[in-house]
Length: 133
Image (cartoon, rainbow, N blue to C red; front, top):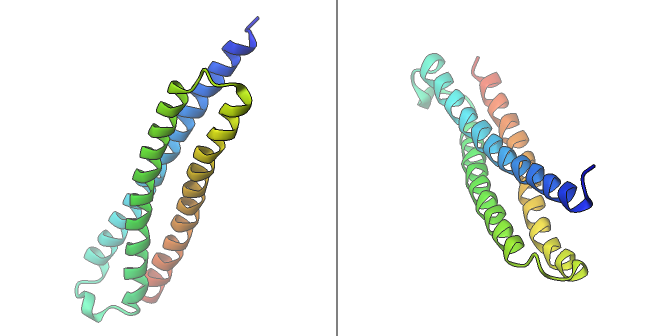
């Protein structure tokens, strides 16, 4: 039977992996959406100056680019949080939990912004495609 310490370490590794996969997914989805939108323009709209509602496209590109940036920042902050965690693992549990909440709040906020950004960016992209089909 596993001790509580072993279970804690396993859960910590699973969480670390999950965060890493989330960061990758956000960057892949945003990059993919940018690529798909460019392919759409290349295949269906030969002259972008004749496209309808290009502001939707520009907004979606801006959002996806920003989400890629947020994903990179979130990945870096996650890395820094893990380093902090390793350096401070000897803190009292109460102190450790109190200080780690700051890292968790920042990462959680960036993740929520990423999810919302992808959703909003996709909506703008869908509106643009819909107006130009």
